[in-house]
Image (cartoon, rainbow over all chains, first blue to last red; front, side, top):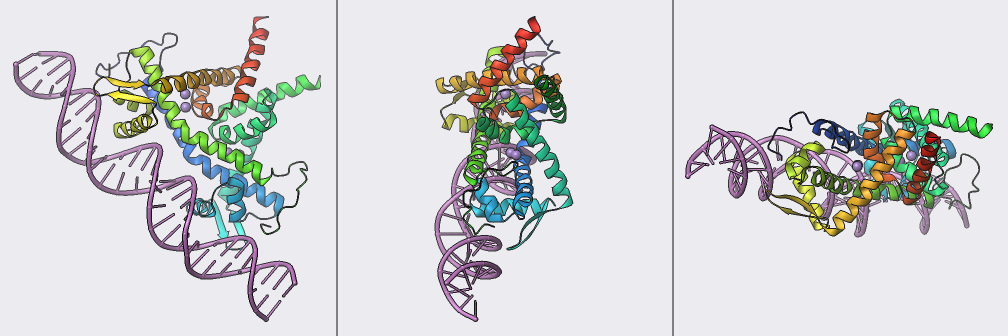
Length: 158
Length: 158
DNA sequence: CCCAATATGTAGCTTAAGCTACGTTTTAGG
DNA sequence: CCTAAAACGTAGCTTAAGCTACATATTGGG
Ligand SMILES: [Mn+2]
Ligand SMILES: [Mn+2]
Ligand SMILES: [Mn+2]
Ligand SMILES: [Mn+2]
């Protein structure tokens, strides 16, 4: 193997995907992994501001379970990417771009969580898994999830 | 905020989780992220060996869409963690530990993919999303997925 | 109104994952 | 049976995400 130029490869059952298709899929997962942390930060910042009025770097660090320099480092990345600003001793704020991202991320988080619960996943496992899964859910999947939930809700209501 | 020691915080609707609970969830997601790559490698190695007889570093690199030094680096990590061995120009091989991990990972991958398809996610999106989601699915969720699929299959068969 | 507790900032390190540019070793086809 | 292509290896760089250890700055309660 590895030397012959893989001629055509008819898709028989259980066969591997083509190299190109598989590389595309892995590439998407890599991209998602690299934006996952940004998404978690903007989502958490939005949640903190909504429910407590402010998002302090220290609080963010504690809720994420990381050291405060780590949080400050990542917040610096948020600033570089024009997602957030900071006023020392006043908190972290989202830019327009950051708020737009936060809205999408929060909606996705809720939807993923609801689907897991609807599938019968116990609450705490659903909450924990959703925190990782959410970053890998495409628009196509979101659409399917939302349709599925509409179905469940109708069934439950009848 | 951030100064008062958060006294009790009764869980009203839409409230944030406790700091401890949230930190635990984020911590799990971080752990999953850090093992995701190892899992993808052992899974891919197992797939390649099964369907082509061998897993060459170059092929692994191509299928992952990374440069071959990147693949070689990560394979070095697999060796360090006692998941694989390599024989130059002969391919990469899984240790017992590696094969055990591969079995679990492949089963999980199949299950996640089937659930996405059962929920109505289009094939290619399901394949791509599964590649990322699989690393964040707990045993509890796997169990729920498997029960859900049994239900769907019965419904479909009737 | 001052000072200790809290919050923030900086320095400097580690590991992982990615890259390009070269260099070396095998292998297989003519 | 020889040599060019393919496979493999190494060096050296970058960025991100994590850490600890200190240093500085604010603030609120007494
Ligand atoms: Mn998350
Ligand atoms: Mn989230
Ligand atoms: Mn994967
Ligand atoms: Mn997989």
